[in-house]
Length: 301
Image 1: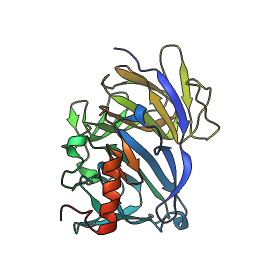
Image 2: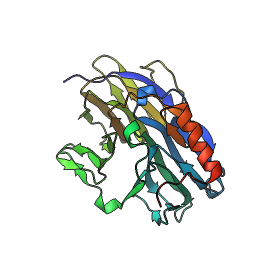
Image 3: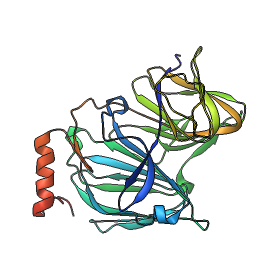
């Protein structure tokens, strides 16, 4: 087995989306080839209701899948197909936009006003860009969890891991999406298929990701960021991009470390992207926006 070296580290940067939601973006709306098949990753974590209650009113999507994972608070959603629902703490929604959908997402805080969740966009291959839209809403109780002898705890949102399989199925990118907690002072190796792109996103605790000779520290206080793959100190909301290999290694600090570990098989297709619509060719993108204007965007009802 070969340990994946760290290619680079970036700090999620502040952004405002929707009707004024303040969040932090790990990557998106640029060259995302090193994350293929993933396009965008946002961390919407806030304790000020004024910074998130305006939400994400009605907007279109085509050609992608959106994955929403809620840790605190709730997200109410509705769409042009008539679906309505609410995601609570620990819940996941995997939405396949396919040929086109209009939807909205409206966050609400918990009793203390806290809101925390993640949204990941996965690209659809050319053959499935115009597939029928669908939802997979998964409650927290239905997400399998496993704890190793050393205290390492993993929630398996998508994919197979340690003999268990996540509840989301039929996803084009065949991804693995794990919520990993490593106990204080422990070092853990986690397998990642060598054919996949992979990244980790640290959001609690502290630790180091390293290969045999190059330690990479990640801790909760934001103290800086660098494209140098082996800086001495990084902070919370740090996104670690891995190079090729069969596994990653993480060593937890005194408070342990919790992070998302996401990997997927690259599509290696051309990307034509503007806003919430992602196609393969510019002509397809132009057609999609023309259809939005003339009222023919929705193909399945």
